[in-house]
Amino acid sequence: MIQEKTNLELNTPVTGNDPVIEIKELYKSFGTNEVLKGVNLTVNKGENLVVLGKSGSGKSITIKCIVGLMDIDRGEIKVFGSDITKMDNSELNKIRVRIGFLFQNAALYDSMSVRENLGFTLKRHAKDLSAEEVENQIKEILESVGLSEAIDKMPSELSGGMRKRIGLARTLILKPEIILYDEPTTGLDTITSREISELVLEIQKKYKTSSIIITHDMACAKHTSDRLMILKDGVIHAEGTYDELEKSDDEWVRSFFI
Image 1 (tube, rainbow, N blue to C red):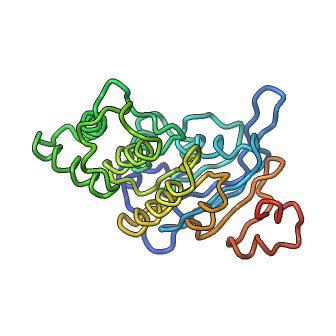
Image 2: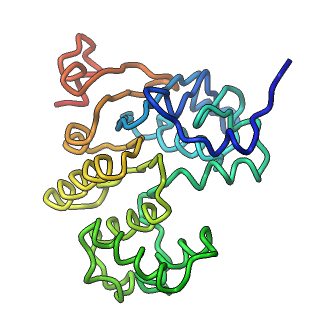
């Protein structure tokens, strides 16, 4: 007999070494273009998993499927032990609140100040907070990303690196258990990219987050990863630590590290 997950189960924290994300035989096509052809992937609690792959290999599509931004053709996606592909919108929204998503462009509201961007996100999901509590949480999270002084700036006044940090602050303000990073260092100079990579590690340590990091930046991959997976032809072609894959016997895998 099939047992449905209750609301209590959907909100129960994952403990121990349980995986927080499990993907089994994930398929996704766009017309005749088969992008994902049976992806299998697991993220353990507290782990940073970096996913590599050539452009168009389906990296970003995979993480969009994890939060239900894209429907899948077939397969299973378990988040916190529950299969999101079988959830209605109400159940899915309970899961989404526990997941942070950092988009490539940070996706800030250009007409709002930094304070307003963060406050809008917080008040939307925590309606019972007082104005003072909202303000305190905004200041705390800006301090965590090293940008307390930017609280009254508009997005147009921020550098690329600052926009990434504010985008990350907006993600963190809801205290997610999982963070999905889509190219967190794209378009940034070497020094700023390093700073963002270090911030990813600081967040993992401070907030005990589990993460998937999509990147083309091998310096970021080396610095942030506990484990790497490489997508090729719609499946996971290789898996291991940075050092293991760098020394792989597979010439195509080694090409990422040159």
